[in-house]
Every structure is written in structure tokens, then in C-alpha cells.
Length: 345
Length: 82
Image (cartoon, rainbow over all chains, first blue to last red; front, side):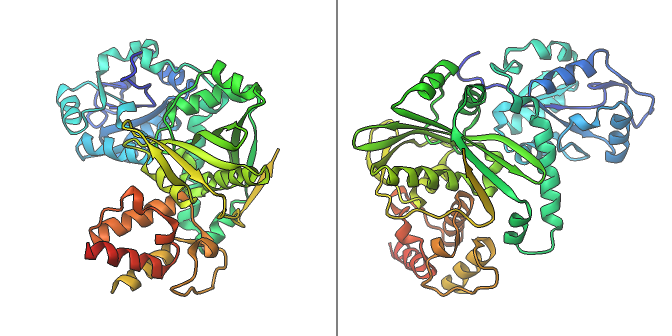
């Protein structure tokens, strides 16, 4: 797999003549294409998400998918009469993934062209090729972790949370408190390493350096006495968000050096990245060391840069490649918010 | 709505505060009043850039420019004066 072609995180399906033979509104006796159920399940079990972009009647189409026992596989389905390019835009926004990680499959060249013109980064595939999807390299993630198997369920949990939040009668603070969130931080265990590698490869927005590490490199850090490899997990009333953050600190004589820090965007609104950073700062301060941090600015990680600055990091130096060294004198450390229980294992 | 009112309103709506009903003064430190997470920080910077047509450069991203309503307003006025 080339460096420039990312793994596919979501397959967006057309319905008529793509998932099923026939046109639903012309005759509701449509038949699923042979083997398509197995394709959908296989990809789902690898942590690849599915959605729909179909020009159809929403209730009718969802009803048919329910009949086929498939409706639960599709997140944020766009079934309406709008152009498919706008369907793709909505799906991308709802899932918060890059356009370049989306594969759109449709039987009509016109639709594929329309989408490609509006979103050049989307990969478009003719519906006749559906059987080959499971063997395509970009649909074979390097590691399949516990979190990837549960990925769709976690997105469904998120949708429930969002509905709760929208319907909640009370302040945002009260809503956050009502979730009974617990944030758990600990040194990485061996069973965390696959997930840690997955995080370094998949996380773009809340990623301070964009460096990826493989299992063996991370294991070496995990075992090294001169390093701390930290992971964190978030749990609330709806269940666990999984292991959603990773930090790597090098322990030097005069300082701690934060080489890597990343957080899954799924928890972006819970503020736990800031808590993670506060924890690391507190520990550095207890150890009597100052805290340095690496940062590499990309097109996607401005929010991460801003959060470092708001944590009181200041730029010490930078090179021509956008690699920045930051330093924190640890004079200002935000306390943990009251609506979150922080557990250090 | 003048600059100060806009900033007060933005913070009131977006900041998760520690004390529900407490009102805040223009000089209150928002980092002590509520939880400044990365989402709030990003929204605040984006709001300032779009509402006042300013580019907040990396060098401007210091806590001291954003720690209270007064500080934010001062920062905006300084940028607008060029």
C-alpha cells in the first residue's frame, strides 16, 4: 500500500442496482446481489464502516434494508433526492473522517463522476466490482484490534449520546455530569500495542507530530525505563469509547520530552485531551523536570497546536520543515473538570 | 453588539463552567472559571478570526491574550489597529 493512499475507513453504497438488483420504487421485489451480505459483514468485522448515498424514499429504503437484516450496518445513511456529492459531504462530516478514506460504490458512471468532481479525494468504484472489495489492500487494515471490531457499535453509542444530549433539559455542564464519565490513564500494556499502532496510523486531527510507530517500536518504548508510554480510556453510561489516546514521554536528566501525543477525534467534545495533558504536566512537575514537546504542524492539526498553546507551551525553536520544539514551565496547569472522574492505574 | 458583548456572549454560550449560575466579570480568568478544552479553544479562535476578520498567528496564541474578556478584547483591538 503506497504512503499516499490511506486505508479506507468507510464504504458508501448506492442501493438500486448496487446493493440490490432492481429499482425499489419501480418494484419492491428487489433482490440482494449474491454475496453482498458477506462482503458487508466481512468489512464490518475489520472495523470498516458503511453508509448509504441513494436517491430514494428514506422510509421505504430503510424498511427494505430492515427486511434484509442489514439496516444496522449503515451509519448516517443519506437517502433523499439531493446530489450524491452532498450526501458524501454529510456522511464525511457526521463521521468526522477524511474524504480520502471514503470509498463510494455506485453502478452509474454519472453519479461516480459527479461525486469525483466535487470530492476529488473520494475513491469511486463501479458496483460490478463489489465482490473484490474484501481483497482490496486498502480495505485490509494492518491490525484488527478489539476497538476496530467494535467500531460501528461505538459510533452507534455516539449517536445515542448525541440524541440524549439534544433532548437533555439542562445545562451542558449538567449533561456532561449526567454521563458519569470515567477517564482512565495507565502505562500501556502489551495488549494495548495493536490499538496504539492503529491510533498512530489513523489519527490526524488531534495528533501532535503525525509520526507513526509500529508494534515493535512501541513495545520497545513500553519496556524502556527511560520512556513512559501512556494510554487512556474513556467510559460513560453508554459504554466504553475504547482506548482513545496515546502519549510517549522520554525521560531525560533535565526534562521530560513529550515525543508523541494523540487523541481520537471521537472524544473531541469531552475535553479529555486537555485532562491527559494536565496529568502529564502534573507528573513532570512532581518529578521536578521541565516539559518539552515535539510538534509538527499539518493541514489538519491546528486544533492540537492551539490546545498545546492554551496549555501554556511556548515555542523554543523550529526548523524549515515545520518541526517545532515547545517548552512548558509548568506554572499553569488546568485542574481536572468536576464532571469527570480521573483514575490513574 | 460591540466587541466586548460579542465575546461575553460567545463565552457564556460555549464555555463549560464550574459553577452553573455564576456570572463572570470582564476580568475573570476563564481558565479558572471553566474548563478550557481544545474544542472551546478552537471555536474561540475561529470565532475571533471570522467575526473580526483577523488572522490569529501562531505567535499570538498565548494564554495572556485569551485569559479573560478584557484580554481578548484588547487583543482584537490591537490586531485591528494593525
